[in-house]
Amino acid sequence: MAYAAATQDTIHDDIDIDALRQKYMEERAKRLNPKGNSQYIEVKGDFSRYIDDPYADAPLVRDAVDETVEALVIGGGFGGLLAAAELHKIGVTDIRIVEKAGDFGGTWYWNRYPGAQCDIESYIYMPLLEETGYIPTEKYAYAAELFAHARRIGEHYDLYPRALFQTQIVEIRWDDAAARWVATTDRGDTIRARWVLSASGPLNRPKLPGIPGIEDFKGHTFHTSRWDYAYTGGNSLGGMTGLADKRVAIIGTGATAIQCVPPTARDAAHLYVVQRTPSTVDVRGNRPTDPEWVKGLKPGWQRERMDNFNVLVSGMRAPVDLVRDGWTALHHDLLTSWMPEDPTSVSPLELMRRAELADFRKGHKVRSRIDEIVTNKDAAEGLKPWYGMLCKRPTFHDTYLQTFNQPNVTLIDTQGGGLDRITENGIVFDGVEYPVDCIIFATGFETGTDYSRRAAMAIHGRDGKLMSDHFADGMRTFHGFFTDGFPNLFLLGSAQNGFKPNVTDMLAEQAEHLAGLIAAARAEGKTRIEATSEAVDDWMKTIREKSQRARMFLAACTPGYFGGHGDIEQGLLINTYGDGSIAFTALLQAWRAAGDYAGLKIY
Ligand code: NDP
Image 1 (cartoon, rainbow, N blue to C red):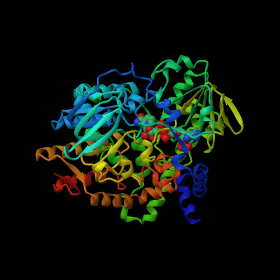
Image 2: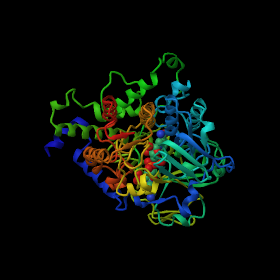
Image 3: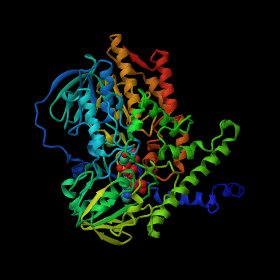
Image 4: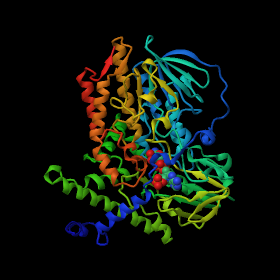
């Protein structure tokens, strides 16, 4: 084919474009599961023990609270902390934060698995660094430092006295006469609040694989987001002496497994890594923070760095790459390097051709790196990803691949199909049973699954309408934040919003925007902010229209949570603003500048 002939020599002599296309589609087909998201087991009923809190010091004993506050923040992770900080900045300090964990931290309260680390550079991932006067110790900080920073923010804004930990909201109900939400909790609290900001996060609910026999296993099991150090010994920094005589299976090879496999392999007698789809694993290059660099930082540096990163990973050009890491290099190679200054100077078909070529080229580099590092040829072949580089969250690690050179580590490459089953004693693949003492599920979270699977509380809006009914056919919002019939309730997160890979940057922008709205309403003595049904309908039309590109992209992708595990319409990417975060930010700026709050009733 002329196309292949034209491209072959420009990529690499031994890369055949047609063969690669076919290989990618074959690998995708192996992984398509008609069950989509419903292949996963929810952590409820017999499985609810998987979400017990192994970290809380002691069961909470306290008197129930009955109070009226200005604002209720749901969730004490970085999203909730940013919301509270922004409220603080506009003078709203009469707030209550409700968090089911035993402390602030969210993801970093729960995810203390060994090797846990932010996968976005700390200097831009850890929010409010300038405000709190903290500089991370490393380019990619480990979990304990991230958790400590969440607590630091809590201290800095005096949020501890305002937090109810180990507490879950059971219901929030809109009281129209009082223009307030009334929240009740599992500790018997009643909290009345004018404004509710919900930041319960996309990664707050683990999910389990629907492997036959999962309930039969008689050994020890847990999910990575509840790492059981009482069983393994040690802590997130190492020393898991309890595993010295244990055969362990880690199921899953996503961003979490990439980080926890090396320390587990170091400490366990034997480790089986059960892989359905390999991650793309490129160079991490972590290093200690350079004090000289710190000395040169000028006020405003963190926002500048965050924005610069976001521009580059959005495929746009910037005069300088401040972060200079695997993320920016990847996006440069995939999105920018081949793009002419004037994209209209070449045909759309030519742009697509160049994009595909760049992706194949990068994939080839990632696969070649595996051959350079992994000495066992079978394992090396198994670890090679055969899909577009952005189909799953890309990963970066400097010791993951090397782990497969250890004699006590076995890759069980299920080639997309997963295990046959789990038995009382172990795991079975291809008819062979592998006895194990412990199974660790690194199988991710309820991200992009049905709202009903994730909703931990009942939300009753105007006239008692349940949000789960309101969202029965899918989420429907205006700008991702507001929905009609649910006044003064603001949702933070990526859904129907401008998604950024640096999630804390996205949350910071959202918190600032929402606090600005609340400040504007308060300044005019208004007590209600509510989206009109027309604005919600229009926004849903926009989301649908702009998701066409994501739909085309995902149709060629290996399944994952970006694409609803094959059920694309349920995918995370379909449900974001398709023009991307830079366009979304511009849209919000223009919307604010217009000054009429079009789409909202503020009264
Ligand atoms: P993911 O959803 O990314 O990965 C789940 C893994 O479980 C996949 O490898 C999946 O395979 C595998 N799996 C699912 N079902 C089965 C099965 N039946 N048999 C075998 N394997 C199975 O979850 P993670 O926890 O790894 O990561 C979730 C997200 O958390 C990341 O994408 C990232 O956004 C975030 N994260 C962030 C970090 C940070 O530092 N900021 C660090 C770690 C995670 P398959 O691919 O075939 O579906």
